[in-house]
Image (cartoon, rainbow, N blue to C red; front, side, top):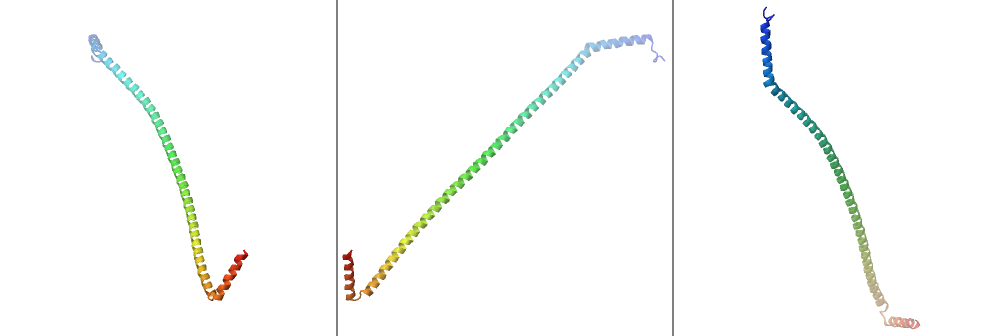
Length: 164
């Protein structure tokens, strides 16, 4: 029962041992432990601050990225619009050039047809004239086969010439 009810000497020596251990711990262990805890607290606080800064930087980078993305989209839209405008302009120019070329070809074809028509008419007139001369020559040969007919024709022609 001595362990349950300790004696005065045991309590005295236990208090002195406890005080001595407390003094030794305070002198040699607590200051390094407290320093280590403070260092740990400081490093944790720095890590938290660093994480907060990184979070803010990420937000600013994300905002910057979105701004760059918006600018890139705007540029892409502008480039597409410019490309469409250029394409439409090229198509319009091609249509205009094709219409001009078509107009020129039609004009040249009409002139060619007109020239060929005139050439054909001239050739036809020449042939008609040649045929008329041949027919007239044959008719005159047939009509003027005798001397009497020739003299009568010359007299008629002379009368007509004098009258004019």
